[in-house]
Image (cartoon, rainbow, N blue to C red; front, side, top):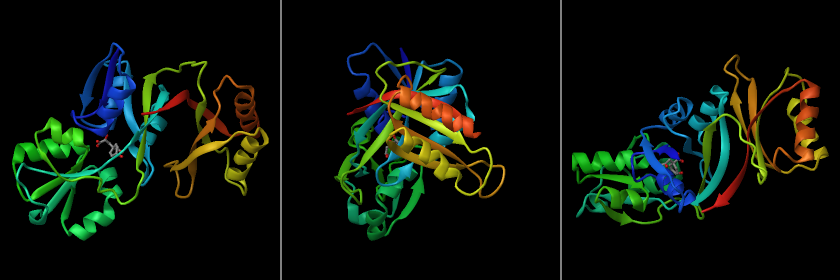
Length: 274
Ligand SMILES: O=C(O)C(=O)C[C@]1(C(=O)O)C=C[C@@H](O)C=C1
């Protein structure tokens, strides 16, 4: 099976994908952005795509969520949670005290906000942590550091100047495996839904949540994204415990639809801890 992931080699996403598919006959191919991974899944260059969904410090990865909203043929097939250790990385021989700039992905930068303020450096963003590490290995600037996984340092022959620099412990990122077209996994224990409320009146969100509560469905994640039609109007992404094959999940969806809200099932899947 061909698996695309947010690259280049050396990202947290590569680490997650490698561990998730360990022992399976897969070919892992890096893509330069989350959008590029999704495009590759959509046009069949890869069978599955691994992308970050949310982080325990910084929250949701909106590029991934918006990609799911915009591509009705994309579905979540699996999930995985990876412990994330951020590191300050530099050229071999570089010193933390000499750094003037730090490069990384916005999610990694946000996980180390306090650390970076204390370091007092200029910050530059890249499409992934490993993209920043690759740029440093190419530009050879001793006054630049990157925030990236240890895997990035190994991949690009860079030095780790300091380990575990995220502002909070523990730090976890949840990744999703995307595929084209829905899948029915009988072992699924979570269902991801996109709910677009039919109209705005008081209690719209409460009406959705009340249905889930009535069916005793545990809500494990909720995120709102703008409808992009008008300021102040939203769509909701939710994860509930239980696969789509479970009666309570199927019934709750049908009741929410009866109320008049639009429901799209984005996936029914299992999540593993890596
Ligand atoms: O840049 C990477 O290494 C990624 O895999 C992306 C990403 C993310 O978007 O959340 C993955 C895990 C970390 O939370 C930081 C960055």
